[in-house]
Image 1 (cartoon, one colour):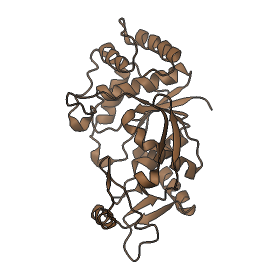
Image 2 (cartoon, one colour; image 1 turned 180 degrees about the vertical axis):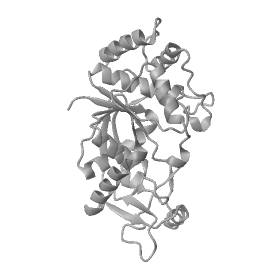
Image 3 (cartoon, rainbow, N blue to C red; image 1 turned 60 degrees about the vertical axis):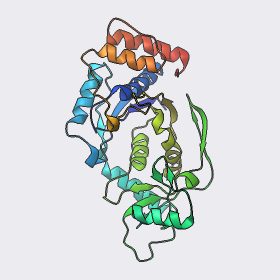
Image 4 (cartoon, rainbow, N blue to C red; image 1 turned 30 degrees about the vertical axis):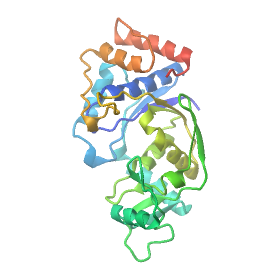
Length: 290
């Protein structure tokens, strides 16, 4: 398949310095491989989306000469695709309804005497795997397979995870009726023919779950590379949640040079287009630098 990469921001606010690193890396990887680069607006979590943020993000990318090869798509318009995928998983006995609230899960884990938090998430104990027992369904969960998922990251190397032990059966459709990130991203990547995913290192922990979903839906598993994170003054990942400032694209080359430095690329003068051409060659020669 012809190389197809993508940048998939959530419109919870404008891009910041950290998100530009992922955008630049994914753009460079696509250009270095002579492939397509797509932009997908991941607005499936509508309560967190900020009105107008998607348009600001697209303008910021354009200011930095990071222009997609095709019209950006929005997850909020793709619910039919997600429903068909859920229906297929139900038919294959890989998805089931769940009646558990967060409090129910906490109580079940306490009764089992098991540590229940991993990166702030509850590890689902499988309460509804055998049925609802008269309770009303709230959400839909993916029935994970036992065993270790192995995958390779072009920057981080070989990685393994036991999804059943570390995460448990995870949500595909939430109790509020919204589609969960894990299902939406897998369906979108498959539908758009994405062959290579370049994204921030904070998303690496999601990969094993997505690999299981890809296998269950019988779609290809892309190649992965997870980029270094930009850290705030407190040492934590720079993010909109901890007050990251909106990316200033009034001087695009200055913003791009900062992102390129995080990726181990050289500082460039001139203009953004010239810098991007040079960085594409550097990226290609060093095979996705860290």
